[in-house]
Length: 250
Image (cartoon, rainbow, N blue to C red; front, side):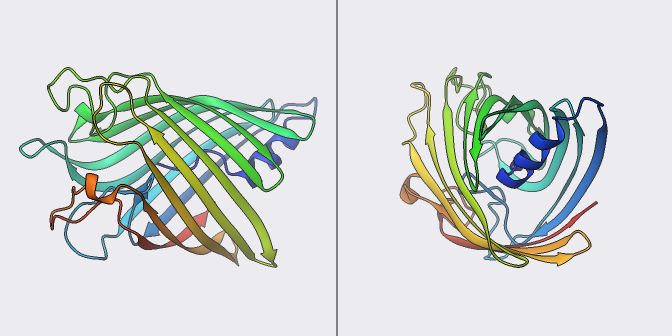
């Protein structure tokens, strides 16, 4: 899952939405990451410490505040012990940003599609707010399916609708070209899902190489590790992992 709008980008786009004359902008991004985690959990459950993923997408932003985009990543996990294997995540999203005083707001819809394992496709609505280097965003599941935890993927009639995810993030330039980033998230499952609610976390930094290139590193993980033993070697998908990423923005 891509961070739809970062605190810094949210502030820039909000300012861009102020002029009376409308304009639009297209951008793209591509990344190579050592391990792909979302909400603290591995999206490639094969054995080994290094499970690289190729990621990238396109974004359209309009000065009115409207934006839409697509983001993709290679993944590798099974929907069940005997189920199909997901090999590609494709996210489609659209939203609207606006400002009230010193606060920047972001509201939209996000659809996750998994090639090879459509049973775990998930749809969420989200609402975010940013103030300076701080931001918070809440995601609410509106589909019956919720990733690999509920819906037709399990064939049990369990529903993920109503599952919520809250993420609080901090991003601050601490030195020219260096930005410190930290986030804390909380997943609250629907009453149908028997998995325990858990907290995920990430602490790291980004270095701007110039010309749209950047490199970043972060320690990423989540609590309740023993409740999420989903890797091929029997280890937890919530395990603490050092994630390195090389990105080019265009």
